[in-house]
Image (tube, rainbow, N blue to C red; front, side, top):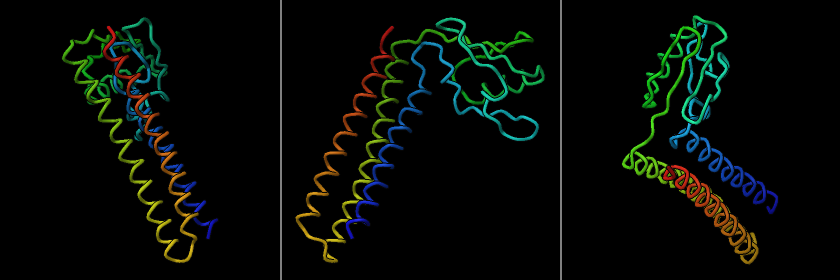
Length: 187
């Protein structure tokens, strides 16, 4: 019975890690006024009839703090990449010079920074909700096992252990969001 509980706990911790991973992925997509190739993560372009990550059809780099340069390996991909960026609604207008697609990141207004900070907090809250859902599942499982004969004091110890880990993950989320907010609000 203890092996079954441990297995469920490990599965819950994997869910915690995935929640943090997802938070980092979502926060990377929020631009903080600085050019970053990570802003284009998740963009898919049509390449020979199938959706392909942008990073697999072009070299993406930053030429300076406010410019992203996208150089496709095939010139015919320029217009496809340009259209993909328009459709992604990133708030950036791509410039195609026939060789490279350039994205100039405009400086953000205070209102836009505040809006992005709220977006970062919302992503953090999503991760918190995911972790709480995993905690709820594992604690319910432990309570069920206690009813089936697992020692109550051992079950309580497991619940306390899980809660300590949940608290640790919650502070990780707070720290990650706090760092991103500071990055967004810094001019």
